Amino acid sequence: MCGMPAGTGLEAWKRGGTALRLESRSREEHPMKRPTDRLVLAHICLWTVTSLTTAGADLKPIWQTPAVFRTPEAVLYDNTRDVLYVSNFNIDGGFLAGRTKPQRREFISKLDTAGRVLALKWVTGLEAPTGLALHDDRLFVVERGNLVEIDVDSARIVDRSAIPDASFPNDIALDGHGVGYISDNGREPKTGIYRSADGRIEPWIPSAQVSRPNGLLIDGDELIAYDNHRKALVAIGLADRGIRTVAQIASEAPAIGDGLIRVAEKTYLVTAWSGPSWLIRPNGSVTALLDTSQLTAVSGSQVNNADGAYVPKKNLWVIPTFMDHRLLAYHLTIDGN
Image (spheres, rainbow, N blue to C red):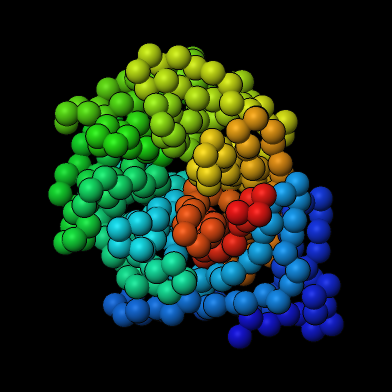
């Protein structure tokens, strides 16, 4: 059951600006003690609370998984199969401090859109995977130093290509032809964004032009990214590499742009790994939304707001919490839609 702390009831749900807070005494057992060769049922929580509405955006919690993941970094929705894929960044939890050589112990998980884990270790043998992208029947995964290609039907790794001189390659976005764009948000990367096409991965945008981008998405003929130098969401022309500012985000929150999600025409969700999130509308207006740092962790030190996914037909926003080892799902309605 999804219990509340004694004496708190719904007062544990509170508003801090546009942030939401939910306290729960539910604690999951250590995920590594759970069986991994069978279907793992989600710890479904239906929170009977009033939806948060701020500047036309309505947000309501729907479900959360158990803390069975291992540092979930990115979630991707597969519209054809109606499932979600999750990259598990570190099997030991947290960051990679002390890891001096590849171990390839991490994995990709698969679950349905109701939060039920279908295969916790769906594909194994990865090295700290982060960003995910899908083209036809191939799932592309960014890992340390490489781009990995997975055949979705067989759940097998079929290719692994080195990303030249990468510092910390992070996210990937694919256009309609399968051309990939890979971000590098390491400490001092030479290349901000790489381009992958025809079996070759090459520098595309130097970090001097777009500084340490993380999340990426393609919208029409432009690549959307967050530029840490401009402190702004920018759009990069796929044809001419021209850069224009989409919106300024006036925040000092660490790691802005971890997640970029298109939720409607020229309308985006931008998340900061540290917790905050914003809705960017076509006119460039910025509306603060959920701050996961205000939520209570159930298995880790904090609740992060990493690279999430959006399920359009359900208006479902799925958030990987990184340090807290679980996924959270919210129903998001924008301007009544």
